[in-house]
Length: 303
Image (cartoon, rainbow, N blue to C red; front, side, top):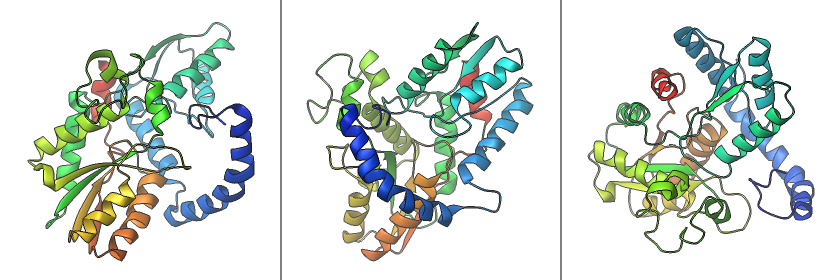
């Protein structure tokens, strides 16, 4: 029901959620989660706990975490720190790129929680780190190590966004998605808030470091929901096209995620791989997220 996620009037959003999504998506999501479940539980929760413990040991200060949706919540994490007498708290959204549907909704939820917190602590907000040298170095090196022998093409699969969510962040009021190369020309404040521009810059930076020519990598977007206009090209369609062109060995990196989760372990490793094989491919390799590699986080937090 968050308007950052579904950009419709509240009554239309309510009908969509209660009339369609809750009737169909929940059962389907349950089966998807079952296919990636581990003996320890949800991969996202298990890895998040490990990240938390690693940062605690390295920073020697209290570290808590929370989900924007679900439990523990952002409020749960914040209150745990307040109960430990923390008067200055850094909030670190684990989304590399800025978007209206991720970073901004976290900030809005944080403001809501602080508004009902007596004597709120001092808050420092860690900004999107898509171009931070420590993060980029760690991410690119993880791709380099994860590329299998014989890989013919690398797909950078970013999380999809509706075009309306991208335009919400356009503080210039009219340049966003106005021309085919607008994101490549973005700079200054526009670049700071343009999700698509940050995705393209990240992918091109990585491709350059990996010495990949333009015909050896693709940039696309996954996890589409509904029938409105979303960022293109889609990962699903890109992989089909590559398979039909004769690409047999494909690697996929998911630069919107720090931690492997349903979108990587099911959508890419299982579902996308099956699509690729059905259209003539032989092997699809998922490049793991950074997961328990936390050294780069220390540099981002310090800066």
